[in-house]
Length: 210
Ligand SMILES: *Cc1c(COP(=O)(O)O)cnc(C)c1O
Image 1 (spheres, rainbow, N blue to C red):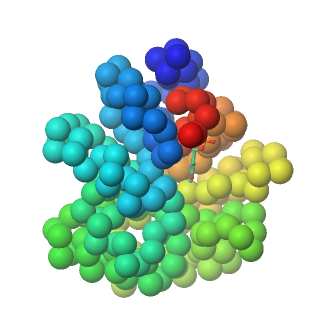
Image 2 (spheres, rainbow, N blue to C red):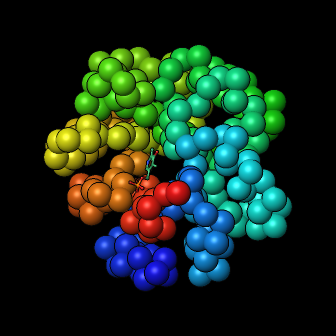
Image 3 (cartoon, rainbow, N blue to C red):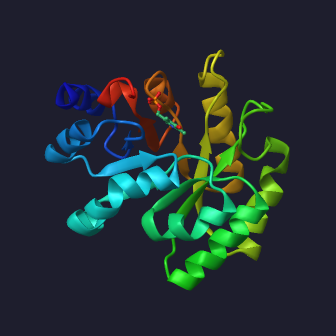
């Protein structure tokens, strides 16, 4: 079933678009199946859970494996996040930028990062507010010397996502960054049509989370 889902999703993707298989809360056998047909790029939203699932496999698969942190990062988890992950999608406040920069220097690891934008300006969502984005980007790149490759968003659930994807793309262009992490199981096709370079797909690939 996973192989079939994978094929269908890949068919809809331009070559340059990266499929991040979101493995959070998925049973082990499904992860094994995805690994067995060659999927090597995975997303997790909690640092602790990611360690349980990937720490051993990290050794086993080496640099072949690419792990993306797609959930909120607390500054006290920054050291562990930098040690395990390859890409951070959820940079959303100065404090986190600062500790990430310090940790990367300490561990001599230079992880590409996305800034998460609270694109619908929702109280309950994380992400930097659009009005603060420019200043935050300057802070991340100039003060912290972080490698910001693009922007990430999760649009409001009960509205058509297209408008928000288009808006994120505009914001990225105005900053001069080129990567766009947008699109999940329900809306990745729309996201791809609007220029997503990274899609984060969980349930459409693995089935419902357990
Ligand atoms: C869980 C999660 C996803 C995947 O969600 P699906 O709807 O299962 O594809 C994508 N992005 C983020 C940030 C998530 O937390």
